[in-house]
Length: 273
Ligand SMILES: [Zn+2]
Ligand SMILES: [Zn+2]
Image (tube, rainbow, N blue to C red):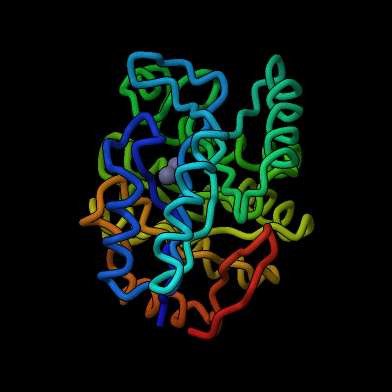
């Protein structure tokens, strides 16, 4: 049974209004043993109207440490972060230095690296797709993940590997995993080689028929030797915490996993499914 949600957001993220304590209470109510809050930090986010996607780490730790102690007897609260990784050559050195400094200065338990922006544009916005074909938009996204997996070392798992499918125009059934296998293989091999993991993100199940990543990609990760996999709902509100974790467990088992992973002090701990 999966009893840890390792990807969710609170009001420290620009796109959530949920007080952290509400997430903790919802996690206790759901019977979770661990909750790792992973608020957004996206340096150089290009669309300020959507929010800055940055927070003050001192205030973040102060608030979460109060809650950690307050709920100590009911749940283990862990402090994580979701870093927005960028592959554009003109900014990637500065962002890498900045994130390396951040994760060495603050005692995070867990760090997700995610792709939210490609070539200065968020694929969530229609303008990303106005300039690209379906294949081109997906390819550039996966290519930036491969480049980030090779360039950054500041994270523990790569977030929602194929979440771009949520925003791709037209029928998503047009997506054929085989058309992107070379580039996704490059990303998976880089992650495994660096000792990094991936996550199973159940937010996909809200609008698609599968979580992220889709089964073919998850099976391939396993086939290439990948073992580290965290599970997260990506909830921005308490009602979506540990969303469809029962299905997530079945999905992992169908793909041959016998364990999922939690992190403490940036170290992976395997948990039996
Ligand atoms: Zn994300
Ligand atoms: Zn997220």
